[in-house]
Amino acid sequence: MKINEMVIKPILTEKATQLAQQKVYMFQVHKFANKYQIRQVLEKLYPVKVKEVAVAIRKGKIRRVGRKMSPRKLPDKKIAYITLKEGKLDIFPQA
Picture (cartoon, one colour):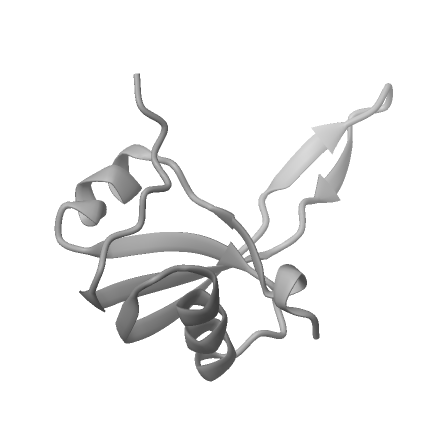
C-alpha cells in the first residue's frame, strides 16, 4: 500500500476539535492499514512523534435512496485516534 493511500483525510468535527486540545487527532485511514503503518506514515508526513494509535471501525449507515427508496448500506470507515508525544498538527482551518 502506498503512503498517499494510507491516511485518507483528517476528521474535522466538534469531537475532533475537543480532542485536539489534548494532543489527540482523528484521521480516516484505509481499511487495511494497521497501527504500525499509520504511525510510520504520520511520522514521515508531519514533524511529530506518535505516542499511541487507537483504531475504531465506524459501521456504515443504511440509507434509502432512489426513486423506489430502496435501502442501501453506506461503506464502513476506519478511524484512527493519534496521540502525540512531541509536536503539533496544524490541520484545522484558521478563520
